[in-house]
Length: 112
Length: 112
Image 1 (cartoon, rainbow over the protein chains, first blue to last red):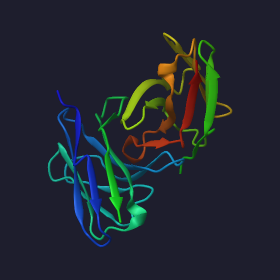
Image 2: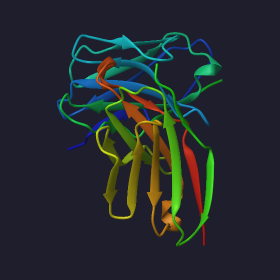
Image 3: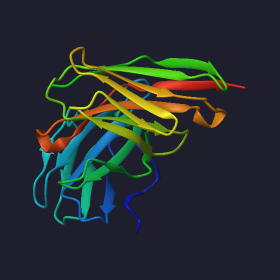
Image 4: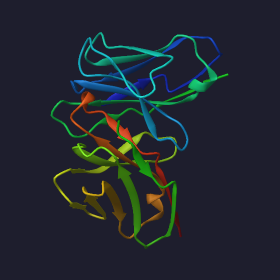
């Protein structure tokens, strides 16, 4: 049982490049979330999904897009990366009846 | 929306008790969580408390909830050097996909 898996684990992008971060969960969870973590600011919610085919904006959605075409996968896209998007990105998932959110190990993204 | 606040730093001696405090603003929060993050790692759920409880004990961990003051604390008894980490408080409610709103994290340093 892998839980929540994020790929890639590390990435360096040049300003203006695009990329997609993949989050996969094997627990049949309905809810999935993308957070970014910056020093002293905790985790801030970027986008979330309450089920396959649905997405919604979180606290800091600008510059990001997401898709949930399959229940087990939640993709986070950066269309034109900016240095302000340098951060550690965490994906999480949660079942409808579960109290615990399970987190991936994080993706460290640097935009130069 | 919800706002969750924590102090940034706490230093204790090995064997002492640690108390990490957190305040939140949304009185409709149903669950309150404590997560631990070690360097370079993801988030590990330590414990959580439902909003109709005022205390929960789990081995060395004691969570106190003052719902009137919207104040949550985590007490770690007999703190060990392995407890050195960043501790995040998070609040969840039944709206918006049960998303978690995190505090900025408290860095706990345990001195031998």
